Image (cartoon, rainbow, N blue to C red; front, side, top):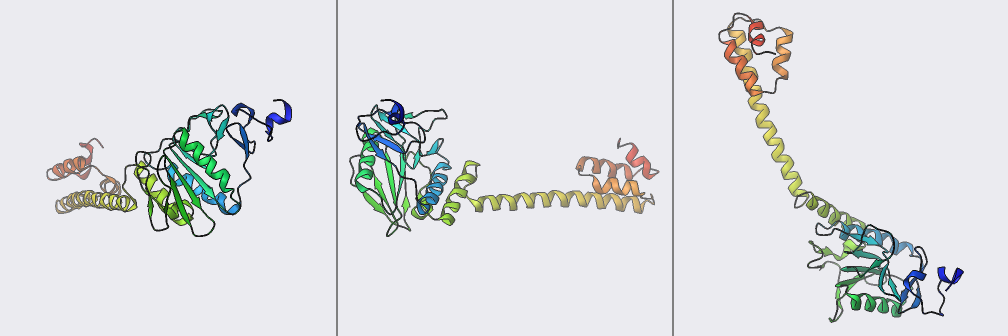
Length: 273
């Protein structure tokens, strides 16, 4: 196969994966080209949302969009979203993703979609979700040797061994729900269960800082009182030193010396400050 035909396979075939280049609007199924039209506006947004939701799941190390997989010399498939087996290197990827997501909208060629599903599942993909954007929103779940089942809005999609968290159906196409799911995933990747856990940690940190500041201020006030009772004049420099000190040890030392010092300067000079 040479020249333009190599860049744009026609129906003559059979072709191999190396005959298709990145950017060509074709996939291959058993050596036959499958034309892949550009994505419409209603589907392109959800594609992005879905890849974000599953891609940032705490259990996911690799995810991609439109990743090309060679399932054999004559089969090249590119799921809309792929999870697992998305290596950081050029060229088509050998094997299959663990989880694949396809978005189907108006004009979807159902026969070609079913061929793609069959190719991926037969090659080893464990789970394939088809997000239906036309008509009632729903997700069709395909697994090897199992009957297809439908999951509706308000329900959760699970991918045991692939994703840590279940995915709300709406998170695969609704921006608000996708943001919530992605935020939870990102927080869990940082060691927090959810946003409430972050807020609770912040409140606890604030309380701890408040306790520490309260102890420091109590010692600062005690030192000022001792200096005042003993008639030791508190200069501006000494007052600033006390107010800015954040060391309990230093304040304790100054307080001990204030009880016996003859001058204010002697309190701080002996402290080496």
